Length: 262
Image (cartoon, rainbow, N blue to C red; front, side, top):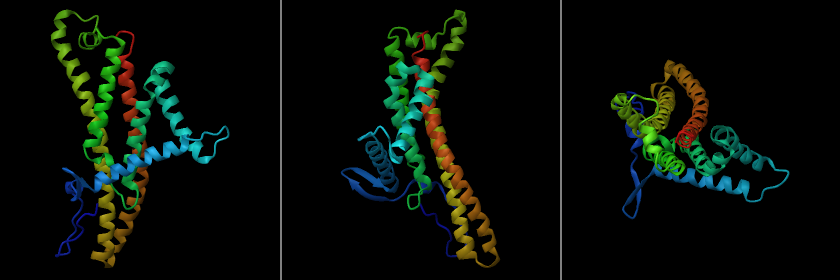
């Protein structure tokens, strides 16, 4: 996205929320397609292609590319799935956890790739869809583990005096079945929205100071350029961290659903 840097009066105009509502490029039937949709599609293609190329001809002595893909898959399997769910349930839910991790990672990382410059997770459709997938998986895991007692145990925890259920049950209903998907969605969305806005602000200011304001203002452009470069590195960390957090929380919710008390 390219923000409106200067108007006819030479004033600086930073990024706005309009960044996330780009113009429609074309339609696929009744579905409008904009630049962010193309970035999301490119992210999906990249995930599928990289994982397919990295695993289609596995070698005993892997090359660099296969090693990198195996490292990523092994991180999700050993560091998240097996660590939180154990080997049996970890392998059972590994496909969904791996999909979530790499989808979030690749859609996050497009925010710092030149000519893309927009994370695919910075509009609510993707975070909400992934949160719904996580939520449905959590519900499925709990019902599969204990068809009759899952909702009962979740809403009416044992060891609580029955009058207290009038307070506890509404709280459990809201926190367990409403707040979780909402927080998953907003945590991912807002981190990427804010990161994108800061990056655009830094580089838009740099362009303004160098090419519009000129003169001594160029010194400030050097500062905003340096800060933008440093924040780009920070955004890489955020992209990886948010993918990890989203996947870990999904695994934690599944672990709570399949716990023995359910």
